[in-house]
Length: 115
Image (tube, rainbow, N blue to C red):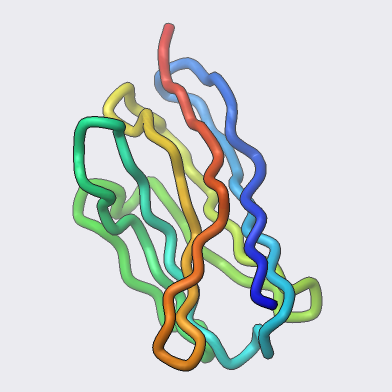
């Protein structure tokens, strides 16, 4: 059974940094693309960043230059380093993988950027 567990969220001041982790189990992790999304309750879930099995990355324009996605296949973990955080980055952050055409999501981790 595929399981994704996000961690690392919290409260941070504007301009601060956080590193989120997404730990996976139940899949051959190294061959899967992993994607981070975020959601504010009244909005649709939006794409943040993705990393392929070969390490190719892509970012939403709103986070380019501030966020970095990376992966450690030996630890079955993907990271999202978030720097220069802004209040508009406040959201619940989710990681996602697809297996056999089916999407799998973690429970999410709350990030709040506020002074």
